[in-house]
Image (cartoon, rainbow, N blue to C red; front, side, top):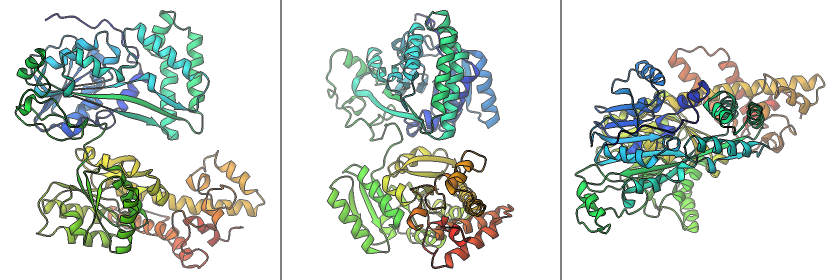
Length: 633
């Protein structure tokens, strides 16, 4: 074999600003398309592993297997090894090497993966050949590459397009390809992979919150003037240091925009290594379906199918930008939130899928069925006679219920001896206490009926209707790739908070803080107005100062300060005061169980309890405490 070495220059280098972004990467945000297909005992090679955050994560997906991280630059491997030691991960090692000439025998690995590597090399086709060479028959070669030409941002701050043009020139001068994401499948064909054995998809990184925007803009503002990118630009006569300084300031200006948003598109490609006989047949012009052997059939039913490992038939699996979707769903609980969530879920599934729905209110079921039939799209719908009937054939069961006692009762009715054994995943989106959730999770595990996860949400009825909910997920890391795609059919964001129960803990901690902030905002606005301050002026001061919070900025309790806030509608709509009282009570219960001191909890609960008893406050948004406190309207 020709032992050539890499001749291209890595555009970013390993400056601290670059490594910060590399350390942010995880298997979930950078390799989710691959995770459902990793199995216990697999041998995995991660090429271009950098500081090892993805590599160490991957090791958790192949128990009794092993992951090797390979990197050209030995210095950064010190960080990777330290990370593995810190996390106590033993089935991973890190080696220095060159992807152009891998020091491994043919067929060493089950999976060979790279992330943002091919865009920085001189010969991506040659590296794909090497990846193919060291992959076992039936194994997977996987690559995820960004596509700079498809990056999108808002607002269009003057100078941002100049930055992209400058980056493209520097990357090209280094021998790389900044638009690699759209090209990997073509490179793979040149490297010998059969077209029918490829699965291509895409996914994005999106930076939209104030924290995300500040982090992303800060990285680029720094690396533009301090990383290897800057040195190459100046040395190659592409830009002067003054030019780079101006581009850095552009990034800072963009990051200061209130509505800043940035999307990084990636192409994702899974390449199945065919058995040798099939490869030989392909070289001699045999058609795609020439063999009756399932191992030699490359006519994939759709773009979400991947092959089993050597010796197995082709299996139907989702190999899209996230995890696979299952075919049969159960949905229990069609209240204000659940009704809209079930509607979104059904509409975004395939016609070949099925959703069985149940609610104790038959009118809710019939109403949803009528709406679905009128829309004439999405999965088939079945009205179930009970929660058990909705769950018996389902691969995924979603529950959205009011209180802990309802969750216990529903799962008791489902987990009977007559429930067929199945590796289900139960996703409870109810807001209940973590202790009850853990008890139910144990009952599911003890019954051998699959896995139970908690996924409470925020966004209210408006978010449920628009499909923009945020889910706080409590689940084992291996379960996340199976659950996340389902939740994203009903929402916009999934935040993995930790093991089962952690999603509820995170939500209740947040809502406890929200409950206090809401009262404090109402008190501060009332105080300022009694001192003669204009409410809009006071809110303006608060919202550029340390008192800024969601109740002051978005849900201000004084009518006219924020036009869209419930205060302008006599506190109608929004997040009901009874729901806030419920969440506060649940947080207090969980705090007592955890032995945590909540010095303000009782006083806050008393405010909401007394306010809810008043006719002028009952049934209204929780910001109505301003009225309860005697605020000027």
